[in-house]
Image (cartoon, rainbow, N blue to C red):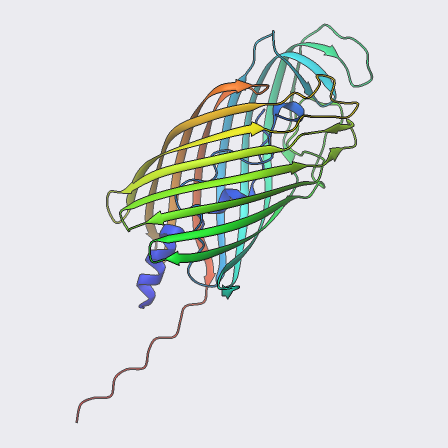
Length: 335
């Protein structure tokens, strides 16, 4: 296959797995938040780049959400009501593909570091971290480096049109955690997410699905054990030209086990939410560098023990280094 053909293919799939490596602080668990970044699956969910090399993704994420004064949350050890949160975060992710023949499939190893600015306001703090009762509103905002995230993925070509993948992701609790504060991006707990994905594509249509479970460890600052989350995603996308594609994507989160620990002052606090919205991708070259840009928008509904919000994504993906196959030897001239 010619080098240009490989690079065009990279511009389409060279980091459709980007947000598998990102965490969400969108106010279900402590603070009404989930580790898995809902909306990060979608088209090409089971694909990995077709060549060995190193790839980069940068995803900007914005989430505004709120809950009325009749709904309570535990945030940073505080029991609060009337929660209003806005999160801007940026997830820089590097993916290394060391092999396209590992256990019969392609192996990807990724690492991401989130940086963001959560801005949180509450109408009333009902109970502080030390048990005292406070009846005034509070506002909090800060720039924060979150917990780094590591992931491993194996993707297999099931048939000429179908790929399947399994993914394991780990949250490493060494980010900046602001004890007792409302605004945080780090979770300050070990978290493991296991997911499986499938993608069917005939070159014009892409139909993808993904399902996973998130297993949460304990936040020792707040003595809070968040329950296990089930997350599901599905998408359908149509390629309208060589460069542009348009589709629709949805997600659902359901907390299947309750929260526990002395810090879980609101009981099991099981959460759920559903989101749906459009997604679009545009592939182009910067010189010889293939770049894929993608936007996503989700409107959430059916929220329980989470904020009522919406999510915006903008991603840029491109290869940093690829190992292109050697060109076949030129045919000897006749005669």
